[in-house]
Length: 61
Image 1 (cartoon, rainbow, N blue to C red):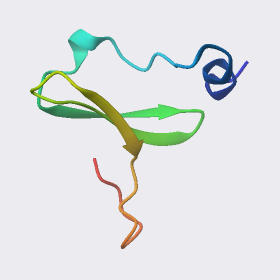
Image 2 (image 1 turned 90 degrees about the vertical axis):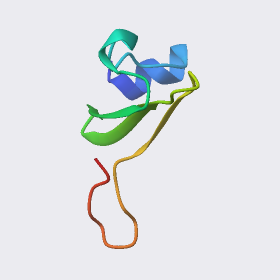
Image 3 (image 1 turned 90 degrees about the horizontal axis):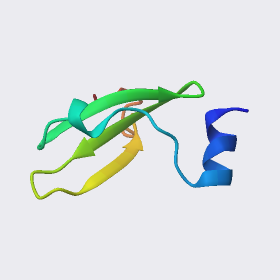
Image 4 (image 1 turned 120 degrees about the horizontal axis):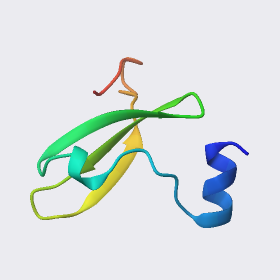
């Protein structure tokens, strides 16, 4: 089962442990060949976006 299939069933795919990403930082991870930026804000919120700068096709992280 691919990671994206696991996400469809369980809602999430584990890409890192919370202790591996410090508050206020971003980590680039790969899921099924897709590059993502996972961020942990200093306020304690998590987020993830595609690792693509859409204006020039470059990477964010």
